[in-house]
View 1 (spheres, rainbow, N blue to C red):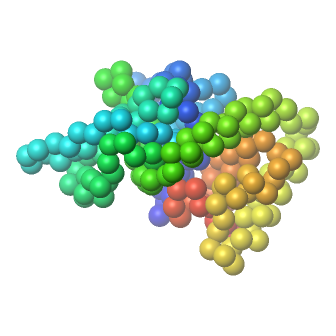
View 2 (view 1 turned 45 degrees about the vertical axis):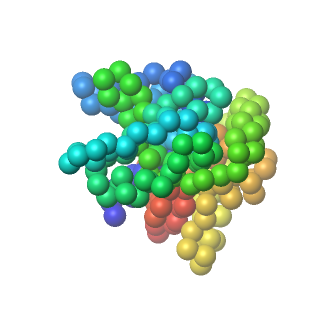
Length: 209
């Protein structure tokens, strides 16, 4: 349960963003991908499965190649249990994947937590959504007082959602139309790190108080 409190926000990105990011290590241990001011350790991506490979024999692993038009990245699943979980994902499907960003042997890839099939049109929807986020994120927060006000609003919304078992980050972004998605994700990240809220599952947040 303790790990859930420290789970990082899964940033909505395009594959090309992750590939442009700088892998950051502590000695030989991979920490995250640095992209601007973001420290990306989890990602939320929409793309098409263009290749699939499943191992044979005792060592069970499953590799997918994900393409969203901005680049290609591998999804890597290891172990019998997780391989069975994602075995039905087929080449040619459009999917949304939420997972942990990894880097091994100079290759950045994603270890999926969730893979869910989507309508192919969702790929364009996500592209437009990210473009909108980038435009909105260029509007800076004026001062610390304004930043605190935004943080307090987000926390109050999370508290009010406790009777419903929490709230999805995407719902907060949709409700707070006057605040950029990047700012909301950053404030949620701070609340997660402070142990004020936690994620019972990816993208779902609850008040810990």
